[in-house]
Length: 304
Ligand code: RUB
Image 1: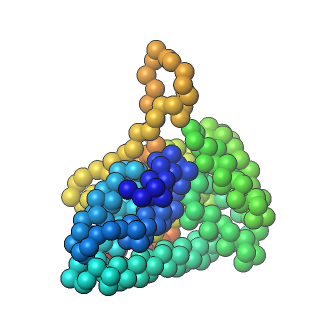
Image 2: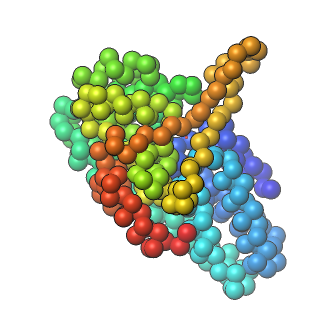
Image 3: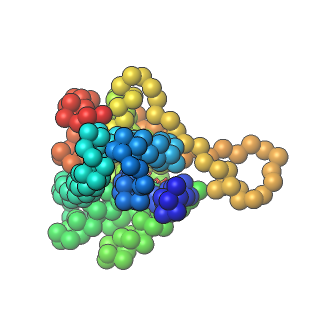
């Protein structure tokens, strides 16, 4: 395997590259490197290399349908009937189209999401979602005045990245520990989180602690939204297969300490659809109740 690909996989596993969107983009980058550096003499050989690489990338972060959907879709455009040079050229062009699509969808979500933020709003967010960040930056850029409260997000502290990025953009942001959410709930007007996966029933899988944010939002009548490209939808859930929740190393919690009790570190949780007012997608706002229809269309439009 090419050193650069090895590096990308390491970074995806260690969370140096994090957030579903960036993970999917990094995986596409690996495909690009593989095509450019492959010594395959025939298109079929290159295709086999890409399939093998797709499996490795998917295993690097098991709870990431956007990664799997993106790779599956781009692979479906590989034309092994062409000679090796033409199939490479063609495939690199298609990868590039996917990069563009990713960026266009982000801009659309940023546009739709920023409409939900009223003047003087307090926005609550959890973890670090590049999509939520894009919404908040866009809201700020179009002149909305609002404040953000973001949770630290134990155990890896992705909330620090959120706080840093937003404050560097000029947004008024306050970082709190996860367990302090209820103390601030009365001040909050809207909660917006990202998404790692959306199931066929419209349930949301996102960073551990998201469900708590949703439950508190419900208790305080705060509208709770998830900013999610439809690529986060996991088609396997159509067949009753549950999205696989990644359990990460307990070192993320206790470091190298030797302890005599059990420690567990689930990285994601499931927020049932009844907590979610809507998904902010590239097609606009979609309630979890109608998401199933939308995803069915999505399946028809796109060759999974
Ligand atoms: C990040 C996380 C984000 C989603 C969406 O988890 O849960 O909310 O991935 O991110 P991790 P994005 O830090 O474990 O990757 O909006 O960037 O796709």
